[in-house]
Image (tube, rainbow, N blue to C red; front, side, top):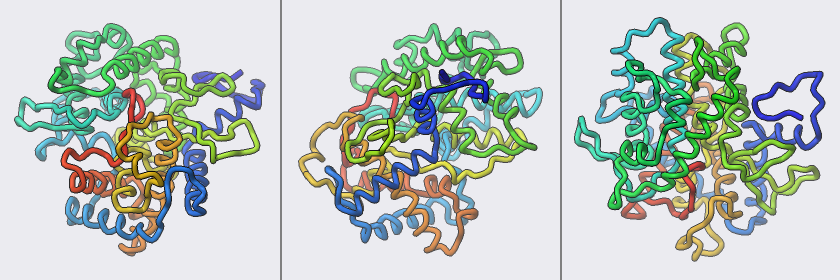
Length: 424
């Protein structure tokens, strides 16, 4: 049987269930099942949401306004964690990296993989009340940007490294010692400044450290076992200096799969950010399963630039999907593209695995593809000029946040999701 981290070759017989499970660990599966969910929505056959395609233009207009405001001269970068390390116009990671004497481009890439992986895994929703105060600028930063800055400061201080004098690294020994108190201090958590899912984040990082130890042959880089070992693995997979973005995601899903809580397994494989929805039936063992892989795709988007800086070409970036999270999803609810059948659901808390939330997230992925097409049509450009990664950054995430603050004073999403710190 194939398990995450093992190799499937011609000499390995795998079960039908295992093969089916592996098929769900891909961007293609996310897109295909999300499109099926949208088709059901357009046929008015979903239990929780109605879809109003005529309202998509309103969402497009908001995204256009956001893009023109943030990037008046064009030049939109990819949606990636690196954008969140820019504080008050200063690229904080860039300043650290430029002041570091790297032995070569690969050494920097490994450090950037370490940082991106640890920061993205800490990037589940912070909740509406948490803030991070930046000691340098005095600015208070919330939500994803605050989590990014806090994780960067911890990384630069060597919290995730067990080697004195070598702070810019992550290793298993340091993660094994990581405590809730460490994260509480690093993220400035107090009774008056609560962070959602604190224990879940610590557990996830400890699982990560255990994974490095157990799969040292996968995560070894330059003699060290660390997240940056994934860079060397991708480098080895590149064909004449080129690797496709969906192939990066497949590696991320396979290699990091064991760290996620075991919500759903199939054929011995944990499916991670994959959930059940009764309307999405198929004729095989994957019936009702809806893969979304939000954090894994967010991580994949964030690994593209380190690979490019190291000299690799990353192709088929549009092979990845939009991200099924509350800013993108909130954009469609707040503009009326999606409407709850039961308006009272807006005032209830919903578990992340509930059919309502799964439905919302899958519809978000499919609608992002449609919005991207409409956006390109409005601007007279093609997907090469405006890939989905730039639409997200330009973009849907910022527009979703802006309209959330217009509609609700605290900027909270239109649907309240109970998360454990490992999904959003």
